[in-house]
Length: 143
Image 1 (tube, rainbow, N blue to C red):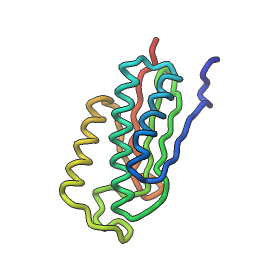
Image 2: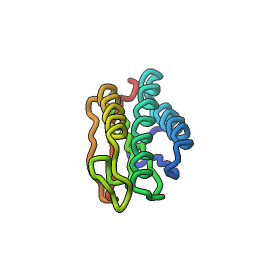
Image 3: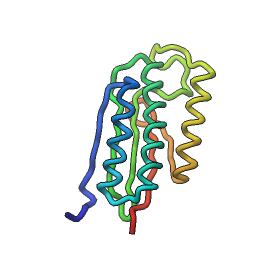
């Protein structure tokens, strides 16, 4: 069955650490579905796991229960992955009445983003309309 640009997968999960492994498995399955090679699938799983870990921490810090979302869609000869949170990001202390960000959480977040950027140089991290952060990266589909 040919993949069209209208195909898209999405996963929403409560911001609990137990669901990060589900997001990782979801992203790996979607990467395989869209024709990524196995090395790329493994890299996607690592990147999504890191992004989701940051998202869960941001939600915990902001004391919110909005779901974290993982979106996957084809884009030409690439597959685009987005992890979307509403946690305000670690750069904003006291997000929405949440707890102040501690230095260790900020360091862990930075390391996770560095890992994602090392795996996928086109990684973009930006504020979103939900008051949180979107991490976006793409991977080449196998020829």
